[in-house]
Image (tube, rainbow, N blue to C red; front, side, top):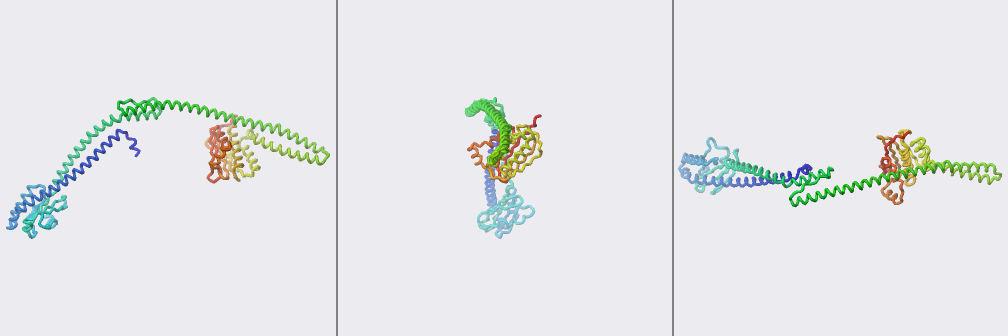
Length: 473
Protein backbone atom coordinates (compact mmCIF):
# COMPACT_ATOMS: atom_id res chain seq x y z
CA UNK A 1 0.00 0.00 0.00
CA UNK A 2 3.01 2.31 -0.02
CA UNK A 3 2.35 3.23 -3.66
CA UNK A 4 -0.94 4.90 -2.61
CA UNK A 5 0.95 7.23 -0.28
CA UNK A 6 3.19 8.32 -3.18
CA UNK A 7 0.21 9.47 -5.28
CA UNK A 8 -0.49 13.20 -5.20
CA UNK A 9 -3.73 14.41 -3.62
CA UNK A 10 -5.20 15.69 -6.91
CA UNK A 11 -4.55 12.29 -8.48
CA UNK A 12 -6.26 10.61 -5.53
CA UNK A 13 -9.31 12.87 -5.90
CA UNK A 14 -9.42 12.30 -9.65
CA UNK A 15 -9.07 8.56 -9.19
CA UNK A 16 -11.86 8.56 -6.60
CA UNK A 17 -14.19 10.42 -9.00
CA UNK A 18 -13.41 8.03 -11.87
CA UNK A 19 -13.88 4.99 -9.63
CA UNK A 20 -17.21 6.41 -8.38
CA UNK A 21 -18.42 7.06 -11.93
CA UNK A 22 -17.43 3.59 -13.10
CA UNK A 23 -19.10 2.01 -10.08
CA UNK A 24 -22.26 4.05 -10.66
CA UNK A 25 -22.22 3.09 -14.35
CA UNK A 26 -21.83 -0.57 -13.43
CA UNK A 27 -24.77 -0.43 -11.00
CA UNK A 28 -26.95 1.43 -13.52
CA UNK A 29 -25.97 -1.03 -16.26
CA UNK A 30 -26.95 -4.00 -14.08
CA UNK A 31 -30.25 -2.36 -13.15
CA UNK A 32 -31.05 -1.45 -16.78
CA UNK A 33 -30.04 -4.90 -18.02
CA UNK A 34 -32.27 -6.63 -15.47
CA UNK A 35 -35.11 -4.24 -16.24
CA UNK A 36 -34.83 -4.75 -20.01
CA UNK A 37 -34.54 -8.51 -19.58
CA UNK A 38 -37.68 -8.65 -17.44
CA UNK A 39 -39.54 -6.42 -19.90
CA UNK A 40 -38.37 -8.57 -22.81
CA UNK A 41 -39.60 -11.73 -21.09
CA UNK A 42 -42.99 -10.20 -20.40
CA UNK A 43 -43.30 -8.87 -23.98
CA UNK A 44 -42.33 -12.21 -25.45
CA UNK A 45 -44.90 -14.01 -23.30
CA UNK A 46 -47.61 -11.47 -24.13
CA UNK A 47 -46.81 -11.50 -27.85
CA UNK A 48 -46.62 -15.29 -27.91
CA UNK A 49 -49.97 -15.60 -26.15
CA UNK A 50 -51.53 -13.16 -28.61
CA UNK A 51 -50.23 -15.07 -31.62
CA UNK A 52 -51.13 -18.44 -30.12
CA UNK A 53 -54.68 -17.33 -29.22
CA UNK A 54 -55.20 -15.95 -32.73
CA UNK A 55 -54.03 -19.19 -34.34
CA UNK A 56 -56.07 -21.26 -31.88
CA UNK A 57 -59.20 -19.34 -32.81
CA UNK A 58 -58.62 -19.57 -36.57
CA UNK A 59 -57.38 -23.17 -36.71
CA UNK A 60 -60.21 -24.82 -34.76
CA UNK A 61 -62.38 -25.50 -37.80
CA UNK A 62 -59.42 -26.58 -39.92
CA UNK A 63 -58.49 -29.19 -37.34
CA UNK A 64 -62.02 -30.53 -37.14
CA UNK A 65 -62.29 -30.91 -40.94
CA UNK A 66 -58.66 -32.01 -41.10
CA UNK A 67 -57.68 -29.26 -43.56
CA UNK A 68 -53.97 -29.47 -42.84
CA UNK A 69 -53.02 -27.34 -45.83
CA UNK A 70 -55.01 -24.40 -44.47
CA UNK A 71 -53.37 -24.90 -41.08
CA UNK A 72 -49.94 -24.84 -42.69
CA UNK A 73 -50.74 -21.61 -44.61
CA UNK A 74 -52.12 -20.02 -41.44
CA UNK A 75 -49.09 -20.69 -39.28
CA UNK A 76 -46.66 -19.92 -42.14
CA UNK A 77 -48.17 -16.46 -42.56
CA UNK A 78 -48.02 -15.91 -38.79
CA UNK A 79 -44.38 -17.04 -38.70
CA UNK A 80 -43.40 -14.68 -41.56
CA UNK A 81 -45.19 -11.76 -39.95
CA UNK A 82 -43.29 -12.11 -36.64
CA UNK A 83 -39.51 -12.36 -36.81
CA UNK A 84 -39.18 -13.23 -33.12
CA UNK A 85 -41.27 -16.40 -33.55
CA UNK A 86 -38.95 -19.39 -33.79
CA UNK A 87 -41.64 -22.02 -34.45
CA UNK A 88 -45.38 -22.72 -34.32
CA UNK A 89 -46.75 -26.18 -33.55
CA UNK A 90 -50.42 -27.20 -33.86
CA UNK A 91 -51.72 -30.39 -32.19
CA UNK A 92 -55.14 -32.04 -32.34
CA UNK A 93 -57.09 -33.37 -29.37
CA UNK A 94 -55.11 -36.61 -29.50
CA UNK A 95 -51.84 -34.56 -29.14
CA UNK A 96 -50.87 -35.48 -32.69
CA UNK A 97 -48.92 -32.83 -34.62
CA UNK A 98 -51.03 -31.51 -37.49
CA UNK A 99 -48.94 -28.49 -38.48
CA UNK A 100 -45.51 -26.89 -37.87
CA UNK A 101 -43.25 -24.19 -39.29
CA UNK A 102 -39.95 -26.09 -39.33
CA UNK A 103 -38.69 -26.14 -42.94
CA UNK A 104 -36.85 -29.49 -42.94
CA UNK A 105 -37.14 -31.53 -39.78
CA UNK A 106 -38.42 -31.17 -36.29
CA UNK A 107 -35.65 -30.92 -33.66
CA UNK A 108 -35.37 -33.94 -31.43
CA UNK A 109 -37.30 -33.66 -28.21
CA UNK A 110 -39.19 -30.51 -29.16
CA UNK A 111 -42.57 -32.28 -29.35
CA UNK A 112 -42.36 -33.66 -25.83
CA UNK A 113 -40.67 -30.61 -24.31
CA UNK A 114 -43.98 -28.96 -23.38
CA UNK A 115 -47.28 -30.81 -22.99
CA UNK A 116 -50.57 -29.37 -21.64
CA UNK A 117 -51.22 -29.82 -17.94
CA UNK A 118 -54.76 -28.45 -17.99
CA UNK A 119 -57.06 -26.19 -19.93
CA UNK A 120 -55.26 -22.91 -19.18
CA UNK A 121 -52.53 -21.05 -21.03
CA UNK A 122 -49.02 -22.17 -20.04
CA UNK A 123 -45.44 -20.89 -20.44
CA UNK A 124 -42.28 -23.00 -20.43
CA UNK A 125 -38.69 -21.85 -20.90
CA UNK A 126 -36.72 -24.19 -23.19
CA UNK A 127 -32.96 -24.20 -23.73
CA UNK A 128 -31.58 -24.61 -27.23
CA UNK A 129 -28.42 -24.04 -29.22
CA UNK A 130 -29.83 -20.64 -30.21
CA UNK A 131 -30.51 -19.59 -26.63
CA UNK A 132 -33.63 -19.65 -24.50
CA UNK A 133 -37.04 -20.22 -26.09
CA UNK A 134 -40.27 -19.00 -24.45
CA UNK A 135 -42.72 -21.76 -25.36
CA UNK A 136 -46.33 -20.49 -25.03
CA UNK A 137 -49.06 -23.17 -25.01
CA UNK A 138 -52.71 -22.15 -25.66
CA UNK A 139 -55.54 -24.77 -25.68
CA UNK A 140 -57.99 -24.81 -28.61
CA UNK A 141 -61.60 -24.86 -27.42
CA UNK A 142 -60.33 -25.56 -23.85
CA UNK A 143 -58.30 -28.47 -25.18
CA UNK A 144 -61.18 -30.38 -26.70
CA UNK A 145 -59.95 -29.66 -30.24
CA UNK A 146 -56.23 -29.48 -29.53
CA UNK A 147 -53.64 -26.89 -28.60
CA UNK A 148 -51.13 -24.48 -30.15
CA UNK A 149 -47.48 -23.96 -29.11
CA UNK A 150 -45.61 -20.83 -30.15
CA UNK A 151 -41.86 -20.65 -29.50
CA UNK A 152 -40.64 -17.10 -29.00
CA UNK A 153 -36.86 -16.67 -29.42
CA UNK A 154 -34.86 -14.26 -27.25
CA UNK A 155 -32.32 -13.65 -30.03
CA UNK A 156 -33.80 -10.50 -31.58
CA UNK A 157 -34.90 -8.92 -28.26
CA UNK A 158 -31.48 -9.62 -26.80
CA UNK A 159 -29.77 -8.06 -29.79
CA UNK A 160 -31.97 -5.00 -29.31
CA UNK A 161 -31.19 -4.97 -25.57
CA UNK A 162 -27.47 -5.30 -26.20
CA UNK A 163 -27.56 -2.46 -28.69
CA UNK A 164 -29.21 -0.26 -26.06
CA UNK A 165 -26.67 -1.34 -23.47
CA UNK A 166 -23.95 -0.46 -26.01
CA UNK A 167 -25.48 2.98 -26.42
CA UNK A 168 -25.56 3.30 -22.62
CA UNK A 169 -21.90 2.28 -22.35
CA UNK A 170 -20.91 4.80 -25.03
CA UNK A 171 -22.89 7.51 -23.26
CA UNK A 172 -21.30 6.51 -19.96
CA UNK A 173 -17.82 6.73 -21.45
CA UNK A 174 -18.55 10.17 -22.86
CA UNK A 175 -19.98 11.31 -19.49
CA UNK A 176 -16.94 9.87 -17.69
CA UNK A 177 -14.56 11.67 -20.06
CA UNK A 178 -16.37 14.95 -19.54
CA UNK A 179 -16.51 14.37 -15.78
CA UNK A 180 -12.81 13.45 -15.69
CA UNK A 181 -11.94 16.63 -17.56
CA UNK A 182 -14.02 18.75 -15.23
CA UNK A 183 -12.71 16.90 -12.16
CA UNK A 184 -9.11 17.25 -13.37
CA UNK A 185 -9.28 21.00 -13.75
CA UNK A 186 -11.26 21.36 -10.53
CA UNK A 187 -8.82 19.28 -8.50
CA UNK A 188 -5.89 21.16 -10.06
CA UNK A 189 -7.40 24.42 -8.85
CA UNK A 190 -8.19 23.02 -5.40
CA UNK A 191 -4.97 21.09 -4.78
CA UNK A 192 -2.42 23.42 -6.40
CA UNK A 193 -1.92 25.41 -3.17
CA UNK A 194 -1.67 22.16 -1.21
CA UNK A 195 0.92 20.73 -3.63
CA UNK A 196 2.86 23.99 -3.46
CA UNK A 197 2.72 23.73 0.33
CA UNK A 198 4.00 20.13 0.17
CA UNK A 199 6.85 21.12 -2.17
CA UNK A 200 7.78 23.99 0.14
CA UNK A 201 7.72 21.67 3.16
CA UNK A 202 9.93 19.15 1.30
CA UNK A 203 12.40 21.91 0.42
CA UNK A 204 12.53 23.11 4.03
CA UNK A 205 12.96 19.52 5.20
CA UNK A 206 15.89 19.21 2.78
CA UNK A 207 17.56 22.19 4.45
CA UNK A 208 16.45 25.20 2.37
CA UNK A 209 14.92 27.22 5.20
CA UNK A 210 14.47 30.29 2.99
CA UNK A 211 11.51 28.76 1.15
CA UNK A 212 8.03 30.11 1.90
CA UNK A 213 4.59 29.03 0.67
CA UNK A 214 2.72 31.38 -1.68
CA UNK A 215 -0.23 33.22 -0.10
CA UNK A 216 -3.64 32.22 -1.54
CA UNK A 217 -7.04 33.94 -1.47
CA UNK A 218 -8.91 30.92 -0.12
CA UNK A 219 -9.81 31.57 3.51
CA UNK A 220 -9.05 28.12 4.92
CA UNK A 221 -5.94 27.48 2.81
CA UNK A 222 -4.82 31.05 3.40
CA UNK A 223 -4.85 30.43 7.16
CA UNK A 224 -2.94 27.18 6.66
CA UNK A 225 -0.30 28.88 4.51
CA UNK A 226 0.04 31.70 7.02
CA UNK A 227 0.49 29.29 9.92
CA UNK A 228 2.96 27.24 7.87
CA UNK A 229 5.09 30.28 7.03
CA UNK A 230 5.06 31.35 10.69
CA UNK A 231 6.14 27.83 11.62
CA UNK A 232 9.00 28.06 9.10
CA UNK A 233 10.09 31.40 10.62
CA UNK A 234 9.96 29.89 14.09
CA UNK A 235 11.91 26.91 12.80
CA UNK A 236 14.73 29.19 11.66
CA UNK A 237 14.71 30.93 15.02
CA UNK A 238 14.63 27.61 16.88
CA UNK A 239 17.37 26.21 14.67
CA UNK A 240 19.57 29.20 15.41
CA UNK A 241 18.98 28.72 19.11
CA UNK A 242 19.63 24.99 18.86
CA UNK A 243 22.83 25.59 16.88
CA UNK A 244 23.95 28.11 19.47
CA UNK A 245 23.15 25.71 22.30
CA UNK A 246 24.90 22.94 20.42
CA UNK A 247 28.00 25.08 19.97
CA UNK A 248 27.94 25.93 23.67
CA UNK A 249 27.47 22.26 24.54
CA UNK A 250 30.32 21.24 22.24
CA UNK A 251 32.52 23.89 23.79
CA UNK A 252 31.61 22.66 27.27
CA UNK A 253 32.26 19.11 26.16
CA UNK A 254 35.63 20.15 24.77
CA UNK A 255 36.50 21.95 27.99
CA UNK A 256 35.32 18.96 30.01
CA UNK A 257 37.49 16.61 27.96
CA UNK A 258 40.42 18.97 28.33
CA UNK A 259 39.82 19.20 32.08
CA UNK A 260 39.55 15.42 32.46
CA UNK A 261 42.67 14.99 30.34
CA UNK A 262 44.56 17.47 32.54
CA UNK A 263 43.22 15.80 35.69
CA UNK A 264 44.36 12.40 34.46
CA UNK A 265 47.69 13.85 33.42
CA UNK A 266 48.06 15.58 36.78
CA UNK A 267 47.08 12.35 38.51
CA UNK A 268 49.71 10.41 36.57
CA UNK A 269 52.32 13.09 37.24
CA UNK A 270 51.47 12.94 40.94
CA UNK A 271 51.62 9.14 40.88
CA UNK A 272 54.99 9.34 39.16
CA UNK A 273 56.28 11.88 41.68
CA UNK A 274 55.07 9.85 44.67
CA UNK A 275 56.45 6.67 43.12
CA UNK A 276 59.80 8.34 42.57
CA UNK A 277 59.90 9.74 46.11
CA UNK A 278 58.95 6.37 47.58
CA UNK A 279 61.59 4.65 45.49
CA UNK A 280 64.38 7.19 45.73
CA UNK A 281 63.91 8.76 49.17
CA UNK A 282 61.77 6.58 51.40
CA UNK A 283 63.25 3.35 50.12
CA UNK A 284 66.81 4.70 50.47
CA UNK A 285 66.06 5.90 54.00
CA UNK A 286 64.65 2.53 54.98
CA UNK A 287 67.57 0.77 53.35
CA UNK A 288 70.00 2.95 55.37
CA UNK A 289 67.99 2.23 58.50
CA UNK A 290 68.20 -1.49 57.81
CA UNK A 291 71.97 -1.29 57.35
CA UNK A 292 72.32 0.65 60.61
CA UNK A 293 70.18 -1.88 62.51
CA UNK A 294 72.26 -4.69 61.03
CA UNK A 295 75.52 -3.05 62.18
CA UNK A 296 74.07 -2.36 65.64
CA UNK A 297 72.81 -5.92 65.87
CA UNK A 298 76.21 -7.32 64.92
CA UNK A 299 77.93 -5.14 67.53
CA UNK A 300 75.38 -5.65 70.28
CA UNK A 301 76.69 -7.63 73.24
CA UNK A 302 73.29 -8.27 74.75
CA UNK A 303 71.66 -11.24 73.04
CA UNK A 304 68.15 -9.89 73.67
CA UNK A 305 68.98 -6.53 72.11
CA UNK A 306 70.55 -8.27 69.14
CA UNK A 307 67.36 -10.32 68.49
CA UNK A 308 65.26 -7.16 68.84
CA UNK A 309 67.40 -5.35 66.27
CA UNK A 310 67.23 -8.28 63.87
CA UNK A 311 63.41 -8.41 64.24
CA UNK A 312 63.13 -4.66 63.66
CA UNK A 313 65.34 -5.02 60.58
CA UNK A 314 63.07 -7.73 59.18
CA UNK A 315 60.02 -5.52 59.77
CA UNK A 316 61.77 -2.66 58.00
CA UNK A 317 62.62 -4.99 55.13
CA UNK A 318 58.94 -5.94 54.81
CA UNK A 319 57.94 -2.28 54.84
CA UNK A 320 60.57 -1.62 52.19
CA UNK A 321 59.16 -4.35 49.95
CA UNK A 322 55.63 -3.00 50.34
CA UNK A 323 56.82 0.53 49.57
CA UNK A 324 58.65 -0.66 46.48
CA UNK A 325 55.54 -2.63 45.37
CA UNK A 326 53.43 0.47 45.97
CA UNK A 327 55.87 2.59 44.00
CA UNK A 328 55.76 0.12 41.12
CA UNK A 329 51.95 -0.01 41.23
CA UNK A 330 51.71 3.76 41.22
CA UNK A 331 53.91 4.06 38.15
CA UNK A 332 55.77 0.98 36.91
CA UNK A 333 59.08 1.98 35.31
CA UNK A 334 58.78 -0.99 32.97
CA UNK A 335 55.79 0.68 31.29
CA UNK A 336 57.95 3.61 30.20
CA UNK A 337 61.02 1.48 29.48
CA UNK A 338 59.65 -1.65 27.77
CA UNK A 339 56.02 -0.89 26.83
CA UNK A 340 52.51 -2.12 27.55
CA UNK A 341 52.78 -5.91 27.22
CA UNK A 342 55.75 -6.44 29.58
CA UNK A 343 54.16 -4.06 32.13
CA UNK A 344 50.85 -5.94 32.01
CA UNK A 345 52.64 -9.26 32.37
CA UNK A 346 54.54 -7.97 35.41
CA UNK A 347 51.36 -6.66 37.01
CA UNK A 348 49.51 -9.94 36.35
CA UNK A 349 52.26 -11.92 38.09
CA UNK A 350 52.00 -9.65 41.14
CA UNK A 351 48.18 -9.86 41.06
CA UNK A 352 48.16 -13.67 40.89
CA UNK A 353 50.55 -13.91 43.81
CA UNK A 354 48.55 -11.44 45.90
CA UNK A 355 44.97 -12.68 45.26
CA UNK A 356 45.46 -16.33 44.17
CA UNK A 357 43.30 -15.75 41.07
CA UNK A 358 44.36 -17.51 37.87
CA UNK A 359 44.93 -14.97 35.07
CA UNK A 360 45.60 -16.07 31.49
CA UNK A 361 47.03 -13.50 29.06
CA UNK A 362 46.79 -13.81 25.27
CA UNK A 363 48.86 -11.35 23.23
CA UNK A 364 49.86 -11.29 19.54
CA UNK A 365 53.27 -9.75 20.03
CA UNK A 366 55.28 -8.22 22.87
CA UNK A 367 56.24 -5.22 20.79
CA UNK A 368 53.07 -3.39 19.77
CA UNK A 369 54.10 0.16 18.83
CA UNK A 370 51.86 2.43 20.91
CA UNK A 371 52.05 6.03 22.05
CA UNK A 372 52.52 6.70 25.77
CA UNK A 373 48.91 7.82 26.37
CA UNK A 374 47.39 4.68 24.82
CA UNK A 375 49.79 2.39 26.68
CA UNK A 376 49.04 4.14 29.96
CA UNK A 377 45.26 4.01 29.33
CA UNK A 378 45.32 0.28 28.65
CA UNK A 379 47.52 -0.38 31.66
CA UNK A 380 45.23 1.61 34.00
CA UNK A 381 42.11 -0.06 32.55
CA UNK A 382 43.65 -3.50 33.08
CA UNK A 383 44.70 -2.52 36.59
CA UNK A 384 41.22 -1.19 37.45
CA UNK A 385 39.45 -4.27 36.01
CA UNK A 386 41.60 -6.73 37.95
CA UNK A 387 41.16 -4.70 41.15
CA UNK A 388 37.35 -4.70 40.70
CA UNK A 389 37.39 -8.46 40.05
CA UNK A 390 39.35 -9.06 43.26
CA UNK A 391 37.11 -6.75 45.33
CA UNK A 392 33.60 -7.27 43.97
CA UNK A 393 33.40 -10.77 42.45
CA UNK A 394 34.02 -14.36 43.43
CA UNK A 395 35.92 -15.09 40.24
CA UNK A 396 38.64 -17.71 40.22
CA UNK A 397 39.78 -17.27 36.64
CA UNK A 398 40.36 -14.27 34.39
CA UNK A 399 41.17 -14.23 30.67
CA UNK A 400 42.82 -11.16 29.15
CA UNK A 401 43.14 -10.98 25.37
CA UNK A 402 45.01 -8.17 23.62
CA UNK A 403 44.86 -8.00 19.83
CA UNK A 404 45.18 -5.58 16.93
CA UNK A 405 42.21 -5.27 14.53
CA UNK A 406 41.79 -2.73 11.71
CA UNK A 407 44.26 -0.22 13.16
CA UNK A 408 42.66 -0.57 16.59
CA UNK A 409 44.19 -2.14 19.63
CA UNK A 410 41.58 -4.10 21.51
CA UNK A 411 41.62 -5.60 24.99
CA UNK A 412 38.97 -7.98 26.28
CA UNK A 413 38.89 -8.97 29.97
CA UNK A 414 36.55 -11.83 30.94
CA UNK A 415 36.07 -13.34 34.39
CA UNK A 416 34.03 -16.30 35.65
CA UNK A 417 32.39 -14.44 38.52
CA UNK A 418 28.70 -13.84 39.18
CA UNK A 419 28.31 -11.30 36.37
CA UNK A 420 27.45 -7.63 36.54
CA UNK A 421 23.81 -6.49 36.77
CA UNK A 422 22.01 -3.15 36.36
CA UNK A 423 21.66 -2.97 40.14
CA UNK A 424 25.45 -3.05 40.41
CA UNK A 425 25.76 0.10 38.29
CA UNK A 426 23.16 1.86 40.44
CA UNK A 427 24.93 0.81 43.65
CA UNK A 428 28.27 2.03 42.27
CA UNK A 429 26.67 5.38 41.41
CA UNK A 430 25.17 5.74 44.88
CA UNK A 431 28.49 4.88 46.51
CA UNK A 432 30.33 7.35 44.23
CA UNK A 433 32.61 4.64 42.86
CA UNK A 434 34.11 6.10 39.69
CA UNK A 435 36.19 3.13 38.51
CA UNK A 436 33.97 2.22 35.54
CA UNK A 437 33.41 5.89 34.69
CA UNK A 438 37.16 6.50 34.80
CA UNK A 439 37.87 3.60 32.43
CA UNK A 440 35.19 4.85 30.05
CA UNK A 441 36.59 8.38 30.09
CA UNK A 442 40.13 7.16 29.43
CA UNK A 443 38.92 5.31 26.33
CA UNK A 444 36.73 8.21 25.12
CA UNK A 445 39.55 10.78 25.45
CA UNK A 446 41.60 8.70 23.01
CA UNK A 447 38.71 8.28 20.55
CA UNK A 448 38.04 4.72 21.65
CA UNK A 449 35.06 2.68 22.79
CA UNK A 450 34.32 1.04 26.14
CA UNK A 451 31.84 -1.77 26.81
CA UNK A 452 31.01 -3.64 30.00
CA UNK A 453 28.39 -6.36 30.05
CA UNK A 454 27.41 -9.72 31.44
CA UNK A 455 29.13 -12.42 29.39
CA UNK A 456 27.11 -15.11 27.63
CA UNK A 457 29.02 -17.79 29.54
CA UNK A 458 28.52 -16.00 32.88
CA UNK A 459 30.79 -13.54 34.59
CA UNK A 460 31.60 -10.04 33.38
CA UNK A 461 33.21 -8.97 30.12
CA UNK A 462 34.99 -5.64 29.57
CA UNK A 463 35.98 -4.71 26.01
CA UNK A 464 38.01 -1.61 25.12
CA UNK A 465 39.11 -0.59 21.60
CA UNK A 466 41.34 2.45 20.95
CA UNK A 467 42.78 3.67 17.63
CA UNK A 468 46.50 2.99 17.32
CA UNK A 469 48.77 6.03 17.27
CA UNK A 470 52.40 5.27 16.51
CA UNK A 471 54.80 6.08 19.30
CA UNK A 472 56.81 9.17 18.47
CA UNK A 473 60.57 8.81 18.25
